[in-house]
Image (cartoon, rainbow, N blue to C red):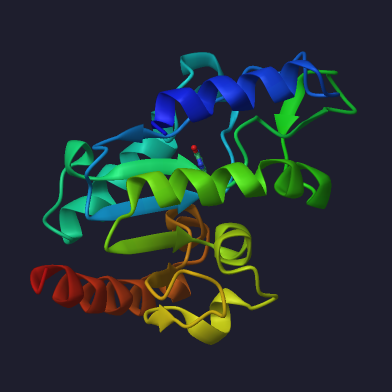
Length: 192
Ligand code: URA
């Protein structure tokens, strides 16, 4: 099966679910990529553009990739959840981004695994806790396993756990740790 066919299936399932009103944001990039990056979920900008990691998050991601000597078109980029989790602002009523809930994560989880099976990258780089748990199927914390390969009982022996690039912007104390983690990933990629 191809990713496009899988995306048709996801869209059809969403249309018959409570997420029918939501616009999906699918993965994109090189289908034969050696590296797949898995983020959390699209935000407002991604929903509008229909593409993952655009706007500010996209700028962060491009900077992060430059540390790995990679460009955006050399990797595959997706999210654990394919819709924008949102809630109305109590003040203005405008939709605000929020963290995906368990129901949203579970709805997309079988599709995420099938997507990663199709891409079959050498390394799946998870960005933050939500994709780490969604891909590994384990209740683990990024703080305990960042910067290394994560062994799991499921099919993937090649998950590399990183903090989400946005978390590093909001928490400067993570910056050195993050750069160190990126260096380890760069060494692994160089051996491919
Ligand atoms: N944009 C995405 O597509 N995913 C994230 O995890 C964050 C921003």
